[in-house]
Image (cartoon, rainbow, N blue to C red):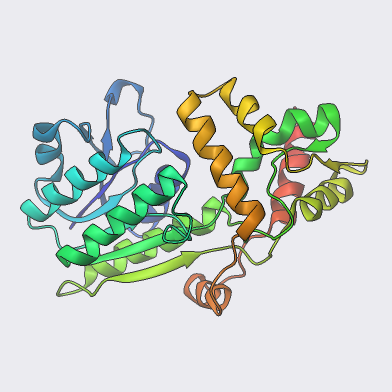
Amino acid sequence: MTILVTGATGRVGSLVIDQLLQHGADVRALVRDPAKATLPAGVTLATGDFLDVDSMRAALKGVRTLFLLNAVVPDEFTQALIALNLAREAGIARIVYFSVIHSDLYADVPHFAGKYAVERMIEQTGLPATILRPAYFIDNDVGMKDVLLGHGVYAMPIGAKGLAMVDARDIAEVAALELLRRDAAPAPLPIEQIELVGPDLLTGADIAAIWTETLGRPIAYGGDDSAAFEQAVKARAPAWAAYDMRIMVERFQSDGMMPDAGAVERLTAMLGHPLRSYRGFAREKAAEWARD
């Protein structure tokens, strides 16, 4: 049966599609502009926008299973509720929703609080769904290339509590497995939450040390100045997004991002291979950058 993937052209969505195709799934991808969407052969495109109700109804028609990934935008919460209500209207009873770890704890971080509200909607309306709760993406640190190579600094102010960073490839594998499990089930399955984490709890100093080892030259941790971080993000993103990110890193610093007991073991068993590590990511990127 058809699986609709939203966020299909992004990092996670495109990886989820690749995984689903490897398992022979019938995949439909929601895109805003088909002319700009580069997706693998065999994927059916559905043109739509979360706030365009008619286009979403058309995209959901004939779909059995939904992967809902909303971008971090000011109206993310509204987009998610519209999509879920329309899915319920269409009789879709197999859903995987992409949330975030500690959405219930980081109550002052706008995009965390919005995702937690969506989780509550799923639970209160009884939608049969898996709620994926990923930690900070290892892949986000691709954006550190220039400051690492040019200034010898790891500049993400994540603090000293530690984050269980996770690789997007592991996220996508788990998401695809859950979509396939729900899609194949003869009846809708109960609501379930899965934390998506990496194998290591890493501080800013830990990551600087990994880059020092990997690049073969000193890399310093840039420190915990969240105000300076906000200004740096604001140079390339809207002010609301920069402020959102500032509050998030302040929670990283005060609370960290620790996994539940047994989360790593559960994910390893689901995937059938060890979780990808930050050190492995750093080695891959260092090799790529050396070829540039």
